[in-house]
Image (tube, rainbow, N blue to C red):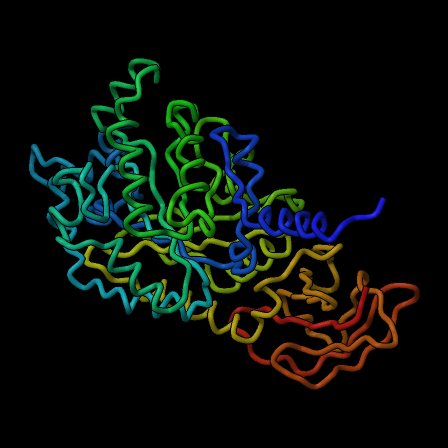
Amino acid sequence: MQVTRSQMLQFLCLLFCASFIETRYTPDWASLDSRPLPEWYDEVKFGIFVHWGVFSVPAFGSEWFWWNWKGAENPAYVQFMSKNYPPGFSYADFAPDFHAQFFDPDEWADIFEASGAKYVVLTSKHHEGFTNWGSPNSWNWNSVDTGPHRDLVADFGTAIRKRSLHYGLYSSLYEWFNPLYLTDKQAGFKTQEFVEKKVMPELHNLVNRYKPDLIWSDGDWEAPDTYWNSTGFLAWLYNDSPVKDVVVTNDRWGAGCYCKHGGYYNCADKYTPEQPPKHKWEKCQSIDTVSWGYRRNMKLSDLMDLPTIIKDLVYVVALGGNYLLNVGPTADGTIAPVFEERLRGIGAWLKVNGEAIYATKPWRVQAENATVPVWYTSKNSTVYAIFTSNPMKSALMLSAPRTSSSTVVTLLGNPKPLKWAPLHSTGIIILLPDLPLSPAEAWTLKLDWVA
């Protein structure tokens, strides 16, 4: 059948018009889970998590201070209060001391940029319900009405974006002691007064006002997603919000959702899979292994050292994940020097080895136990072998790579090609140079044209 010129023009017009028709997502998981994850998230690999709020004032135990004191009535927290504060002192009385008087958002942003992180996630509201912006739905329990008397979310976001970092916001769905939430809970979550008057207005306010690139939802586990109206919110977020084309979300949208629904998967805190998950994932980890919020009683032995952090980062990226590393600032708005030292150490390592991390993909083999632990990442025709211990030998044998006559091997940070030889049908033995000093105790071999 011969196609006329008019028919061809109509066909081309239909194709052209179809390319501009936006996908609309319906408020159900089948539709929402079909949304492709915006590409920027998989490329950035490394981010910083910031837990900051009224819990930073007592700075004892963890960011769950209020719940441990008044909810669980943990003896250590009860005793801490009785020894240090007068009778009748309430958790709300801590808020005026959340001064943030030394908070310099540009200084924080400089530190995070120096760490090599490409995105930053700030707690806009933790389970205590205190908002770090002037939420119209949190009267007198926000950072504008009390404490710092400033919009922390806005000030920090401006500094972050000046450095071309992606800005994400953490928001807890539930609030431990909010009367509206407790009433809904008592009704078996058959009423939604808390969601309609607090959760949804605040989430919409956050998105419309600050336009975050990422929403890190939490505090969802006591109620199903139908109570939280999660699918309705996400449909609006993906279809009609000002960030609909770039925003990334996690998987904490109701009991039973994590590791199952949402944008990428957090699963449990400090999620550590043994095999590469089939879905894009993220490990959130805190430098202070005991708490996410700042603790005045933290000990050096509680903190991850630099080699441990780098090993964790490399493992996560090799298995296809992103690594979100947490710091807890003080109530006066400073980042503890020990946290800054760790972050700058990561950045120094990434300056040399970052090409083996950013925008990489998992290789066909993720790891092998050579004479030292080795993790693999890949990018196009290049494979990176990251070894997280000094072999203390002049040669390193790798069994996974298959070489060819075109194979070239270099050590990142040193452009001079290294001598190598094939091992039987697969594998390679590489003559190592003197390894440069690495406080992170990790080095990367770049293998071009291996299979």
